Amino acid sequence: MNRTFDMLVTGAGPAGLCVALRLNHLGHRVLLVERSPLWPRPQIGEALTPGVRNIIDYLDADEVLESVPIVAGKPTRVRWTSESIETVAHDGAVVERAAFDAALLRLAVARGVDVLRPASLAQVDGAPGAWRVQIATPDGPQNVEAHVLLDARGRQSRREPQRLHARRLSTVWAEAAMETPAAQADAATRVEALDDGWMWGAALPGGRYRVMFTSDPSARDDALEREPASVLRNACTRSALFKDMAGVRWCDSPRMCVSTPYVDALAWQDGRIKLGDAAFALDPISSSGVEKAMRFSLQAAIAINTWCRASDASERELAQRFYESRLIEGAARHLAWTAGYYRQAWCAEAAFWRLRSTPALTSDTVATPSFGDETAARVDLMTHALQDEWARVPSDQPQPGEPAPPPPLPLHSPIRFARNTGIVVVPCATGDRVTAHPALQHPSLDRPVAFWNGVALFPLLDMLTRATHPLELMAFLGRSMEAASAQQLLEWLWSRQMVEPAVFGA
Image 1 (tube, rainbow, N blue to C red):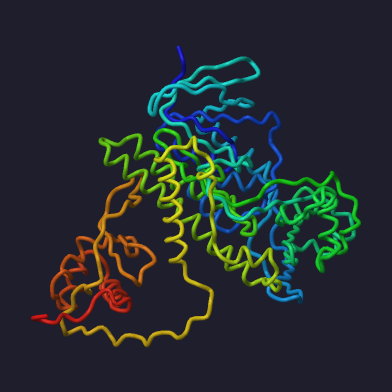
Image 2: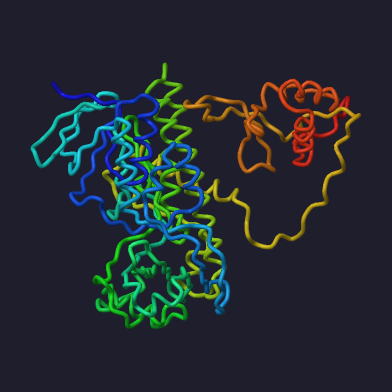
């Protein structure tokens, strides 16, 4: 008899392990399938941003970081906004990613997640909620059944029609022994903008120093120029921060990989859902790929849990809306941030930087007639949603002038919602489920707001649909929050011009 699981997760990176741990905690039977015969597998995404600590705490997984070699507290030498070199403090850390993934996997097994490794999906049949999967293992095929298939296999270099991709990037990297004088100088992290790309270097916990160069592969026509060792050596030679490493002896031959950012417009399909880099891959300039993958997996786990336990189609649709809204928000904000960061480079007028200074995504759907109208429509819908989202991201460009601050909140005169304040229903994470909540919508807000400091705004603010005295409303709100918080909420609404003086007879 085939074994049955609620969740079948493919990929034992941070995204797959994070969602496996969370769904297991929520009571789902989870099978994790990892294809790599080498374990722990080597990785090149070693940077951990400070937010990873909060995720580890949320998973109650302190032992993971305690057992992983970490390099932290090193200064960062930067040549970015000008051609001069700055030294700044750095609050992130560099870990041995193989050990980090291995520690998460040990924790998942200890908590009851089933694991097959090395193994891969050989055949998938069935339908959402009733998948029949044949898994290839060294001991022969195994057949299992699963309700949901989760793809966390990481960044995919193969172009797919439903994928919206930014301008092309490739990254070449190599490592030198820390005994090398150039690497040992101060063991500082180094970040530098060149006219045709950018470089990053950092000390690794294993006693090596890694150097990376990210650029546009289409800008190199000559085959020799595209050879990884030549690309990296040439970049070091032209660099101010890495010039001393142009002639070092690398521990292994330099390697190259695709690092183009992208978003998969079909990341959610009923019963088949993508996570982490399989859903959207970041520009490596952020150094936040691990955190984003883990955080998005936790958000996806809430949507998946809701979809599996939904009582009707509307709940399942709400789960999908929540997942896609988090995907769009995360991807668009990163694209907008990246474009802003590229605009700050001292060489921003060079073609490499100029082409990436504005968020842009394209797809290959038009060139793929085998994809139907429905798929093309979803890709188009996702494209416009991403464009709308990054348009809401605050610009780093100088503004013509700040508006004058509004007068103080009139405590003794009636107020009501402004005419351009709307109330919409949005999907929100409430505990471990996605629920529909009324939210405020207004031009001054990046997105609809359903909660304020953890308190649902409705039905608390229903009184503002009509003329209401602020003191009366604060007394009412005081039943659900501190009096000071009630006044702060009204002052926030007033400062955002979401409420206005009530004009009787108007």
